[in-house]
Image (cartoon, rainbow, N blue to C red):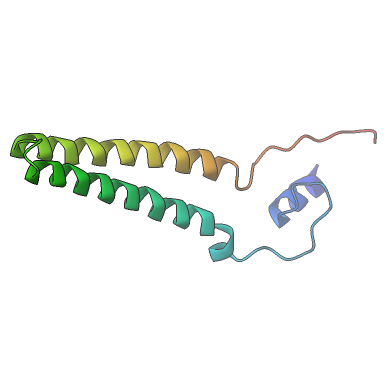
Length: 101
């Protein structure tokens, strides 16, 4: 059991297939930063669309402010859900361990 824990901590998931080197942290979390930038860009774009609708006389000033607030809250909540889901799959703690094979 201690051997399994050592292999899991070494990064091969307890399967013995590790190359002996851990990936660079910046390399491992690159998709997280990329996803963060994408969510932020979409939120900024939608906030600008809301302001554009204000200047096009489709929204009042209060409606444009509400639109920016709701877009920000929605983007933050969706990003948090996506980030937690992604982070839970980066390096799972529990691996199936078959005995007798």
